[in-house]
Length: 79
Image (cartoon, rainbow, N blue to C red; front, side, top):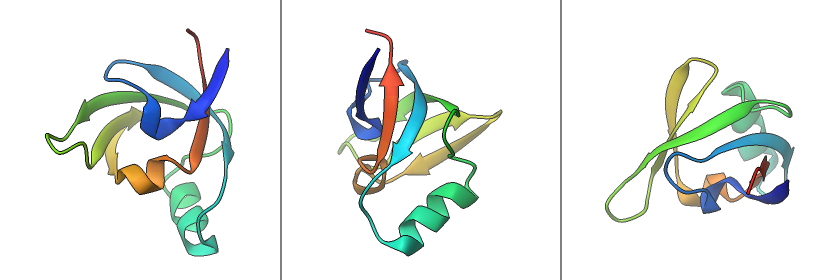
């Protein structure tokens, strides 16, 4: 399994969150409040035409993150 930022996944790829790095404490709290915690599976649904934001599916709901936010979330991906 490879580790990479969530922002680098391609449409259809699934990863498991292993860490949240960088960013402000406020951003980390926001990410955690959305349910994006270690061990959570997350799938890339679509990327906007200008590559920002990115839509994800996790825990039965969809959410969008800016690329700058997604780069702070490290996931493990089967390659």
